[in-house]
Length: 385
Image 1 (tube, rainbow, N blue to C red):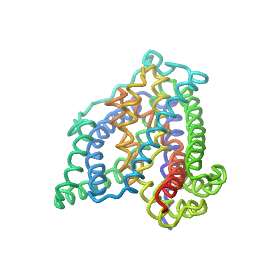
Image 2 (image 1 turned 180 degrees about the vertical axis):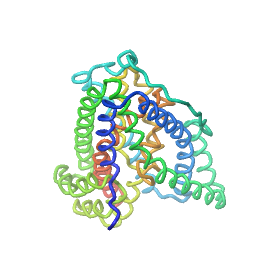
Image 3 (image 1 turned 90 degrees about the vertical axis):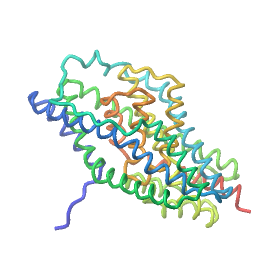
Image 4 (image 1 turned 180 degrees about the horizontal axis):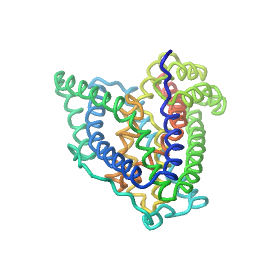
């Protein structure tokens, strides 16, 4: 019999259901064992994230190359601008919408401190460096490789990036459902699981609505530049949206996205250049999904979140996400360190963000690939001649 493969989305759903049921019936001892695993895995995440940035962002910068043309720089610039704009769009909408149907501080420390589960032991795994150091070092080495032409150093970081990818794909991602299971189990044992699940549904629905609204804005802007009908162009991109929603990947649906983009009148050469490139640098949907989850967690846990702090997070997250599509769940992994170092999240808050992010993964990549078509329309208008 062929081995049955269950995708990450289904595993996360199973983990949420099983964790909720287990937390309601299990005694304290197994819950503390799960808590021990939770704490250890959180330490492993802190250790791996700076290495992920060094191993993926450095080669991504080096691969741009000294001879990059205007079109390459235009695509990267527009993609980055779209990504950070999506983050600010999410902040503007979420911060005004959440007070209408979420309760501030409902999962604050005071609200859930009635019963605490301590791990049996806490093993510290200090990271090699913090996330900001890793980002700055990645830029320094990446730009240095471009101007010195150091093929040996570039090859070394390419191979180091492959090791980091392998670790993420074979260790971190398979263990994520167990991490979520232990967190949900502890919440159920504390008696706050009903709040988490009810709130989670509202947060995910908010994220889906905001990604659709952002796509409409994207196509209105792009089609105003190219003098096309935005809603007709969006309709032509529907197969790419639905395919990405189903397979939860931007890179895997490049052929579908390219074909849909050609239907919008974009020339073949522009499509062949822009769509594969945007699949690695344009993360507007994933950014909205992450931003909505993070803003909601900050709101329901009573964590202050100023615009200045959030702006710092979005600007850095847009850079860290550039190389993320090379790894399953890469945008989330690249952002874990930023959630803690910039936004001040603790391990429990970060785990809750991860749960919300992974609970319905498809709408982020669906927005990403559909937005790629909008960028292709703009590039076609600017560079077709």
